[in-house]
Amino acid sequence: MPGLGWLATIYGTLELLTRLGFLNRLLTQEGQNRYEFKGSLAEAHHHHLICLSCGQIMDTTEHIQEETTLIRKMEESIREKYNFFIQDHQTNFYGLCSRCQKSMG
Figure 1 (cartoon, rainbow, N blue to C red):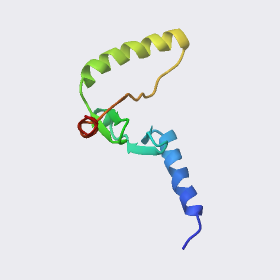
Figure 2: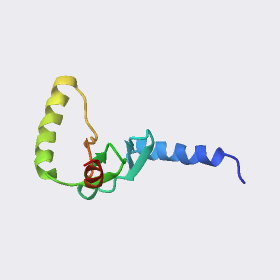
Figure 3: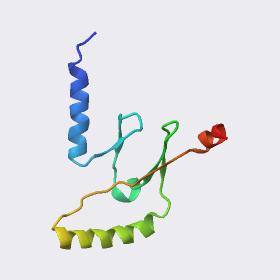
Figure 4: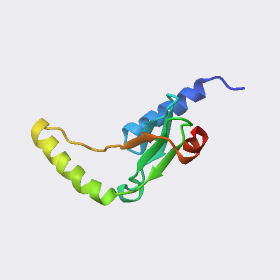
Protein backbone atom coordinates (compact mmCIF):
# COMPACT_ATOMS: atom_id res chain seq x y z
CA MET A 1 0.00 0.00 0.00
CA PRO A 2 1.45 3.40 -0.93
CA GLY A 3 2.26 5.96 1.75
CA LEU A 4 -0.06 8.82 2.61
CA GLY A 5 1.89 11.21 0.40
CA TRP A 6 -0.62 10.70 -2.42
CA LEU A 7 -3.39 12.02 -0.15
CA ALA A 8 -1.47 15.25 0.44
CA THR A 9 -1.05 15.54 -3.33
CA ILE A 10 -4.81 15.19 -3.87
CA TYR A 11 -5.66 17.80 -1.23
CA GLY A 12 -2.96 20.11 -2.56
CA THR A 13 -4.41 19.79 -6.06
CA LEU A 14 -7.93 20.54 -4.78
CA GLU A 15 -6.63 23.66 -3.00
CA LEU A 16 -4.80 24.80 -6.13
CA LEU A 17 -7.87 24.28 -8.34
CA THR A 18 -9.95 26.23 -5.81
CA ARG A 19 -7.48 29.14 -5.76
CA LEU A 20 -7.37 29.17 -9.56
CA GLY A 21 -11.16 29.42 -9.70
CA PHE A 22 -11.98 26.01 -11.16
CA LEU A 23 -13.61 24.64 -7.99
CA ASN A 24 -15.89 25.92 -5.25
CA ARG A 25 -15.30 24.69 -1.72
CA LEU A 26 -18.23 24.13 0.63
CA LEU A 27 -17.69 23.27 4.30
CA THR A 28 -20.11 20.53 5.38
CA GLN A 29 -21.82 20.27 8.76
CA GLU A 30 -19.25 17.64 9.75
CA GLY A 31 -16.42 20.09 9.07
CA GLN A 32 -15.35 18.39 5.85
CA ASN A 33 -14.81 20.09 2.53
CA ARG A 34 -17.00 19.36 -0.49
CA TYR A 35 -15.67 20.53 -3.85
CA GLU A 36 -17.72 21.39 -6.93
CA PHE A 37 -16.56 22.18 -10.44
CA LYS A 38 -17.51 25.75 -11.33
CA GLY A 39 -17.97 25.32 -15.08
CA SER A 40 -19.23 28.38 -16.89
CA LEU A 41 -20.96 30.84 -14.57
CA ALA A 42 -24.27 30.64 -16.42
CA GLU A 43 -24.40 26.86 -16.11
CA ALA A 44 -22.93 26.34 -12.68
CA HIS A 45 -24.23 29.17 -10.49
CA HIS A 46 -26.51 27.81 -7.81
CA HIS A 47 -27.17 27.92 -4.10
CA HIS A 48 -27.05 25.18 -1.49
CA LEU A 49 -29.77 23.88 0.80
CA ILE A 50 -27.96 22.24 3.71
CA CYS A 51 -29.80 20.02 6.18
CA LEU A 52 -28.61 20.67 9.73
CA SER A 53 -29.76 17.22 10.83
CA CYS A 54 -28.47 14.71 8.24
CA GLY A 55 -25.99 16.94 6.37
CA GLN A 56 -27.62 16.45 2.96
CA ILE A 57 -26.66 19.18 0.48
CA MET A 58 -29.07 20.02 -2.33
CA ASP A 59 -28.47 22.47 -5.16
CA THR A 60 -31.08 25.07 -6.12
CA THR A 61 -31.28 27.72 -8.82
CA GLU A 62 -34.41 29.44 -7.50
CA HIS A 63 -34.46 33.23 -8.09
CA ILE A 64 -30.99 33.38 -9.68
CA GLN A 65 -32.06 36.18 -12.09
CA GLU A 66 -33.35 38.38 -9.26
CA GLU A 67 -30.24 37.68 -7.24
CA THR A 68 -27.96 38.58 -10.14
CA THR A 69 -29.45 42.08 -10.34
CA LEU A 70 -29.09 42.61 -6.58
CA ILE A 71 -25.57 41.19 -6.43
CA ARG A 72 -24.38 43.47 -9.25
CA LYS A 73 -25.66 46.49 -7.30
CA MET A 74 -23.96 45.23 -4.13
CA GLU A 75 -20.69 44.56 -5.95
CA GLU A 76 -20.68 48.06 -7.42
CA SER A 77 -21.36 49.61 -4.02
CA ILE A 78 -18.67 47.51 -2.32
CA ARG A 79 -16.16 48.29 -5.09
CA GLU A 80 -16.79 52.04 -4.70
CA LYS A 81 -16.83 52.10 -0.89
CA TYR A 82 -14.03 49.62 -0.11
CA ASN A 83 -12.08 49.46 -3.40
CA PHE A 84 -12.69 45.70 -3.27
CA PHE A 85 -13.34 43.70 -6.42
CA ILE A 86 -15.56 40.66 -5.80
CA GLN A 87 -14.74 37.68 -7.98
CA ASP A 88 -17.28 35.18 -6.66
CA HIS A 89 -19.80 34.51 -3.91
CA GLN A 90 -21.66 31.59 -2.36
CA THR A 91 -25.09 31.46 -0.77
CA ASN A 92 -26.03 28.63 1.58
CA PHE A 93 -29.39 28.09 3.26
CA TYR A 94 -29.42 25.98 6.43
CA GLY A 95 -32.49 24.14 7.67
CA LEU A 96 -34.12 20.71 7.69
CA CYS A 97 -34.76 18.52 4.64
CA SER A 98 -38.18 16.92 4.15
CA ARG A 99 -36.97 13.52 5.40
CA CYS A 100 -35.62 14.97 8.66
CA GLN A 101 -38.76 17.07 9.15
CA LYS A 102 -40.86 13.90 8.90
CA SER A 103 -38.64 11.96 11.29
CA MET A 104 -38.85 14.76 13.87
CA GLY A 105 -42.44 14.91 13.85
